Length: 197
Image 1 (cartoon, rainbow, N blue to C red):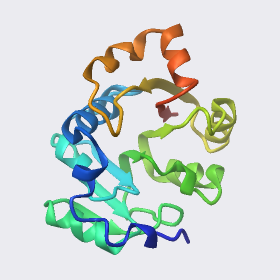
Image 2 (image 1 turned 135 degrees about the vertical axis):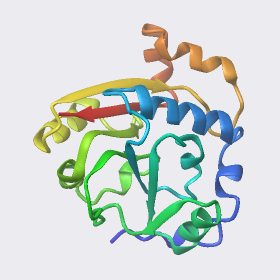
Image 3 (image 1 turned 30 degrees about the vertical axis):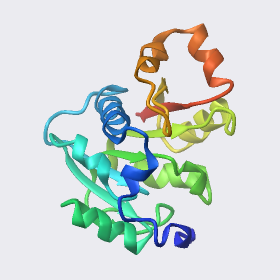
Image 4 (image 1 turned 60 degrees about the vertical axis):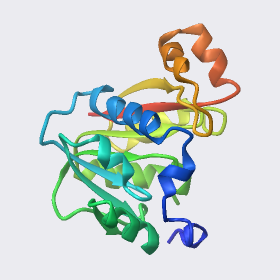
């Protein structure tokens, strides 16, 4: 089981302290959850693994949002935001019923076995898995192979150029800039991945 103790004492106002502009950061992430890969519809369910304080749910109001986090303080912080948050480790958690979409942000490196995690998620996810990936840390070809082995046949990607610690609004316009986006990704930022079958 992953140790979530390092987040203890940090749950209060987590999102407000983690992001220079929490609204812009989480709004753009929510937009891409809805549109990258198969589109989400109102009423579709989103299971957010390693959700922290569940602030992403504030921007997925047309979906049924449920967060899962391994730190009890984060779970309480999310519940105080009015979110449905469950205590659980992303490596072990499985919902009682299938969900439309599963997300994992800033946490894929917590996977004890990435291929096994993807297979477990595929078993309960009906439409797509959306997660972020640091392309300087993980080769996209390796991740694609793990997704295919888990039963996800399609992978769509998109750069995510909203900085976490600085407010630089114009950067999102560069996400579709082709070679310039590829150049930026060599040095900074993440790629959002939507895997579906």
